[in-house]
Image (cartoon, rainbow, N blue to C red):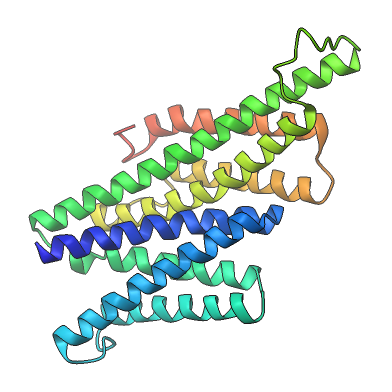
Amino acid sequence: MTDLTMTRLHEVMVVIYAISLVFYFIDYLRKNQKLYRFAFWGVSIVWIMQSLFLVLYIVQTHRFPILTIFEGIYFYAWLLIAISIAMHCIFKLDLPVILMNIIAFCLIVIHTFAPAQMDATPLGDNLISELLMFHVVFAILSYGGFAIVFVFAMLYIFLYSLLKRKKWQPNQFARLPSLSQTEQGMIYALYAGVPLLGISLILGMMWAYVALGNFPLADVKIIGSLISMLIYSCIIYKNRKGKLYGTKFAWATIYAFLIVLINFFLGSRFSAFHFWY
């Protein structure tokens, strides 16, 4: 029961950490201080939980937890998070903090769902199933974000067309958002969807390694997901550089969403192991 409780707490920690990374990513691109504070406190909660787990482990084993690779990974993740918090408080460095937390997140996922923890036991089988569940949930959340981007992009093109043809009638379209609001909706949903997809890929690769062993990296679904994330990342980059804006920005996100749909339906069909979709 104690092992199961600790496992659940570690899973909660992974979820909090993943959400914090999404907030950090959005703040880095949009400079939203509210999300920045949420991300910082989320990471701080993760570090406090890790510290408590380390203290409990030291009390139980009467030694410092660095004698095995499994213990070293956990302590290394704890150290990286501590350094990132210090850099946040002292130097106010954004990008290094995000990169260090991405590395620490990968280490925590490895530790939480490590093969060494997943022998042929009911708890091990349960962990594998939950790792898969986390992967699917974050993937669906990212697809939901991209769907929101698609909806706002269609609205943007519709509103732009009305304004350009001077057919805007305030009484008829009073409940529609403005061009600025639709653009903000596209941007925020896009900034949330990309890191969610990245987290889903990390969790999915970890699950495939644990559950399948030698899985094909050239799998159609994996390649399609990486291409989708790359396309959306390029859209973000070009938009921030001022090379992609207005209707061109909206059309780019629409085409990207079509690629996501193709990958979701056809990629799953031809994938070697994504048969549950």
